[in-house]
Amino acid sequence: MTSRVGIIIPLFNESDVLPLLAERLHKVLPGICERQSVTFELFFVDDGSSDQTVARLLDQSFDFSANVTVLSRNFGKESALSAGLDEASRAGVDAAVLMDADLQHPPELIEDLIGEWRAGHELVYFFKQSRENEGSGKSLGSWLFYRLTNYGARFEIPADAGDFRLIDAKALSALCSLPERERFLKGLYAWIGFKQKGLPFEAPERAGGGGTKFGMARLLLLAIDGLTSFSIVPIRLLSLTGLLISLLSVFYILWIVGEFLIMGSPFSGFASIVVLITFFGGYQIFFIGLIGEYVGKSLTEAKQRPVYLVRDKIDLKK
Image (cartoon, rainbow, N blue to C red; front, side, top):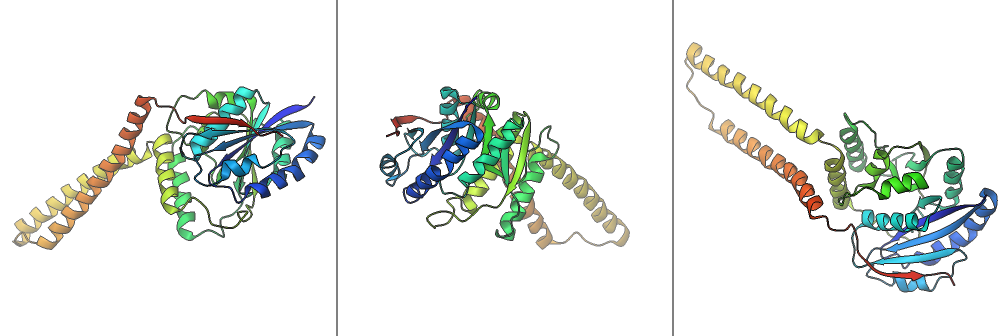
């Protein structure tokens, strides 16, 4: 029996790589269809591109059912992926594959995802085999993020797992049923459970040249979103650190009083007092901001605004 597999591809200013992507899909997908007894449906989501992405997409010809959902503005990759997942779920596909348009997610590896799906896994994902070509700061930040997020959790977000993955129809339905607005999909993939398997891979260079669209600032904001969405460890660290500082302060006060009573030393140390005040002031401001992140997420969820808005839907099959 032939299975229907949807391929979800978010787009943001990808006009330069679209011809390369279309050419590669035409070359790879027909062979996978024959070997794996599947048929593909393409779901493109334009996330408010400011270049000629949509116009360039309309110039392409696809042998498979293909359509593009044009969002009303740039909502971010998580929202664009959510739009694609919703479209695939409504289309009733048997499984959905998520991949980037820049060919850092090679279409040839889709067959590996389908093979593991055929073997009984309901969610199959690729993870980076190594981070040797990344800076030490980024590698350390990634390590720290996953350790903090997974600490004490009842489920584990796989380290270094990306969006290149296959989701079975049952898992897809569960994912689309989640009502939250502030979405960190890597966490949601893990949270829904089901039978999952990770596969290692080495990401090639981005097609068409150019660097990643995710600089350190955007990665930091994404990490904060993920951490505050799936972990209360920072709040617990705040409480424990406050308790530790209070205990140290008591011991320090006892030391000063004892030094005065025993040795007769006068109370002094203006510089140390200023340093301590500055340190604890910065500490308090930092954690007030952290608490504000949690409060802000609660406010966003309470407003119940949609994750994305659709401006247009276009059938691409020629």
